[in-house]
Amino acid sequence: MKKIVFTLALLLMSLSAALAQTWNFADRDPFIGDADETLINADATNWYNDATKGRYNFLAALDNAALTANGTELPQFGIRNSA
Image (cartoon, rainbow, N blue to C red):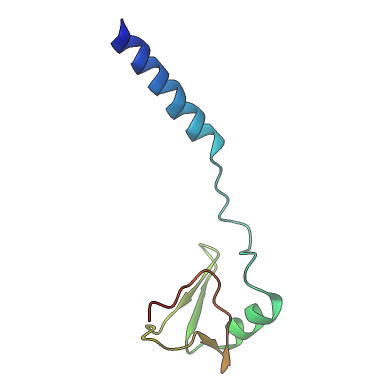
């Protein structure tokens, strides 16, 4: 009996967690400002706008270098320097 109650409780908790979580990748990233988006769109050398997925791809690998678009350094939110 305990096993059945535990299983049902676990199932209900899993369902409530799955229903509470929402994902919306179609909205624009709130951390990318209008000026940054303009710079990214102007820099075809380093950036690719994947319109089918609604995201920007940085083509060059970062190796302790600044994130730039059209020659201007972009702010980096949520990235910690490990040095």
